[in-house]
Image (cartoon, rainbow, N blue to C red; front, side):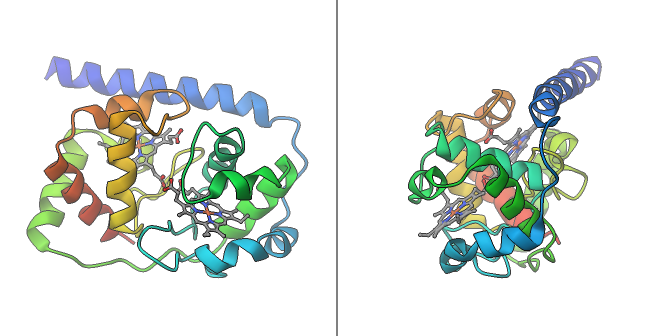
Length: 201
Ligand code: HEC
Ligand code: HEC
């Protein structure tokens, strides 16, 4: 019990530290404009949809993602710290204000619909998510918050790919906290968590 509490405390410290760093970088930003963001997102619609729902299972839903999470992923693609799906080239042409405006547009859209999969897998995924404190950072319903991605209603195929990439280190996360969270997961754990997250609204 003591050990469990300690793990949770460490995760929370890690979470607040990373947010404090990000908070500093944001403080001089102009207010984001979702209307301008929609105009700037026209090139994104071909894959992420005007409604923020990806057109195929390997393309993430952006609808209702926290704006800061979208912005920071775009910054990482532009800086080539994260690679995949030609996103590096697409983000290269965006300045910080473009990213904040586009993020405001997608963040304000209604969340993706819940996907019902195998009930046993979903139950197992929920259990792992609780034991591993995924919700201490991603939110009680894995809805995301601040710079941390929404997992609820996300494509399960996409989630599996990302968790494996984060676990192997081929996707480097911004502060290492997500790398530590993924390291202990087996392939079966990952499949179950993805089914659980996808089933949430
Ligand atoms: C050709 C299809 C395509 C287009 C066009 C496209 N994307 Fe993507 N996007 C992807 C794919 C595929 C991924 C997943 C990349 C990976 O595997 O890491 C992705 C990932 C992302 C992510 C990360 C989401 C997350 O949950 O981590 C964001 C944010 C994003 N795209 C925003 C945009 C924006 C903004 C535009 C327009 C400027 C855009 N994308 C245009 C295919 C596309
Ligand atoms: C200490 C906080 C923290 C914990 C605990 C945590 N995460 Fe994360 N997670 C993050 C952050 C921060 C990111 C963004 C990483 C980046 O790209 O820099 C992230 C990203 C992700 C992504 C990629 C999402 C996307 O749209 O690309 C997935 C999937 C994910 N986490 C699943 C999980 C699961 C499953 C657990 C529990 C086993 C978990 N996380 C626990 C902070 C956390």
